[in-house]
Image 1 (cartoon, helix red, strand yellow):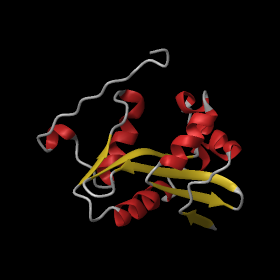
Image 2 (spheres, one colour):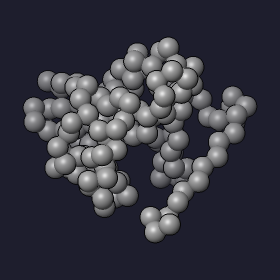
Image 3 (cartoon, rainbow, N blue to C red):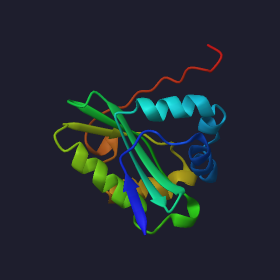
Amino acid sequence: MIEYKYDKAIQAENLLSLYSDVGWTAYTSNLPQLQRAVAASRLVISAWEQDELIGLIRVVGDGETIAYIQDVLVKAAWQNKGIGKELMRRVFEEVKHIRQVVLITDAGEANRNVENWYTHVGFKRFEDIGVQGFARFNSPDS
């Protein structure tokens, strides 16, 4: 039975296992930084099967006017079982008083299924709602 926890204190080895499983090496290359980021998030909801972390969603923002879904991930063996949808449902419940809920993901063919999933759970593409998005990525050396 899957248990959902609202807890930011997640051990490094659990985070490493989850983020590695989905190939997010930009996060796993600096595990202490990932732990600090999770701990500093506004909201973290995780999915567990016994002692195994199988999914996680985390939100950053001001808690009043904007909520930014930073990460949503589910281990490959557990995908397509409703875990991501349940994580998203729980976040939407927690941020229902907030006007803007934003999520940005990588574009491209490799993420086409993910993009379709985001629209399935209620997100709209920026161009479909008349907004623009901008980003700046700083190199780790700057």
